[in-house]
Length: 486
Image (cartoon, rainbow, N blue to C red; front, side, top):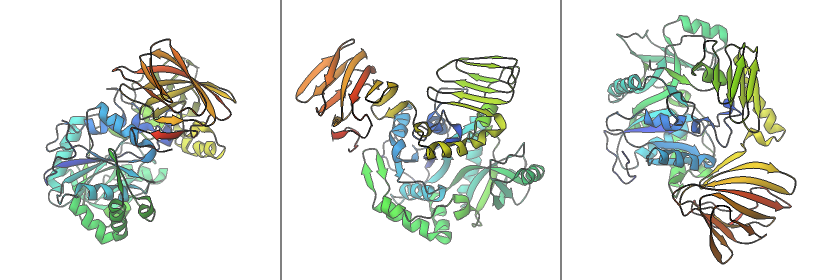
């Protein structure tokens, strides 16, 4: 179902708009700023990431087109690679220079979708939601299309089953039921305290705000022009003065910087008379904390969800996840323990929302673990830091089939490459050679060099760096397949 960007969009088409620029801080240490949760597989049903499942669950909807994805500069190659893995070429990947909340992001997508004087329907989705019943989800989207085709701005609400303080709420004008699943919207409510949330659970007019929207692009833009014309004006200028960069479109930074920071709820949905809410019953959840991950995981007969190399004894209602080392839990209750190769989180399950506060402290104290994992992703593959000292470092590099690092030079370090698996094409100054398994080469300081994988299988090698400075910013690029500059 691959669709070319050159294919014409029609007024009958349905374009998913996927918001994928978040940092996923509350799922640290698994989720990091440069590799956040939407690119990680947290599903019990398949190995696809949250982002991939966001699109894949839509298959079967009529007139479904490839998505417009809004992301940021640092995540652009993750988005492109994950879409390539599921054989999808996005209609557009829009790169925001910085996040300005959902109203500007959706406005950019709506303007992009109507660029050819067409008026498609937009289905706005977060990239980090879980949906258990995909058939029921598609059915409620189809029901919503009947309302959006009549000029309504549709959102979807979840019937609350507990007093959740981590979600916003929607108050409908009338109680919703199986016989009456749609209503006009009375108001939106920000995340409440526990006392207010308990009242909302008892009042059948209150629903959790799913953050999913459905509307004609033109209807949304007209309402935006009525209530927030400045957002519309700045987004138009940001696209007009933006630039195409390979498969990406970079929003103009100077123009976009002036854009108001507003969610769509406040910018449009609270003010419009065209808002409708439909009940969504499809096993929805916002995977926003480790408690919610535990809640959505398979558990043993004592309520423990265990992932990876984990052994427990006399323990109940815990979430234990090992990415690298063995975790042993004895006589523990209601705990979350998450281990990666460079950090360990231990928290009471009901306190995992505070991870965001801890991350601020880590950043303030310049802990690298706040943003980066030991495994770093690049458009050509990835590298993992194995061991390091003051003047040396050992890394494991994996180069994807037919991929290549940039033609580059280092001012302050030399490198030694040892091939572990696959075949490497190595360029050092004017010399080109092929290296096979167990062969190695040395790259002297200030030598112009490039490493490529000519094969159809991954290339794996060990890189030993030696020098006075080993930072990733000691790279002077001369040529790059991915449009990166020094």
